[in-house]
Image 1: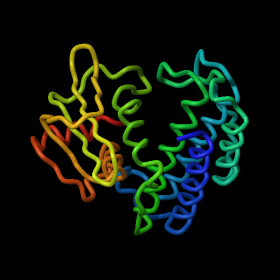
Image 2: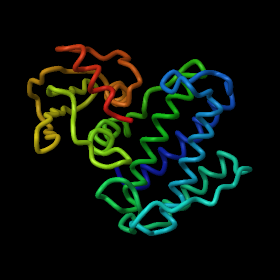
Image 3: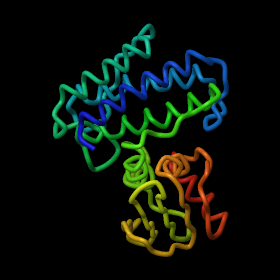
Length: 233
């Protein structure tokens, strides 16, 4: 996906998330059971504001503290994020918790963060639509690239004790994840894993982020599958 496509998805999913929050503010969020939908909306706004600060700061040496505005609306925070990302070159330095210390990291990260939480908000409100077709395959890949390899405290050093095969059924896409002493090896191939999941790119992405199995089909050790779906924070 190119930058303009990512920004379109952030805008569309961000607006949809805020609409779902407004429609059912007191509903509980299944993936984040301590949160109401309104609290999820607050989290999204906080993230958008935080990332805007990191992109504007152009400082890869460490996290820059945002100047919080308690009266800022989700709509204004979303607009501020989109403006900052659009105006900043993807190669401009920006702090995050991975080796890719550029603003481009945040363009991709925010597209997927917003899509996942849009799904959460709509699910809480009573009916979630899948991750958009043009984004969902990259949501799977980004989860593998980032969430399964880096936490905010640093690189992940251990994974479930067994390999995982992911098979997309609504288009091209297969991934084999093999943990080892030298890290997580990821190949794009049709190969047998110790456990496997098959289904749409949206369902695979949501499962990797701990949002349940949807219509996925599974093979192999159930405990291993549960362990893989718990790696992402």
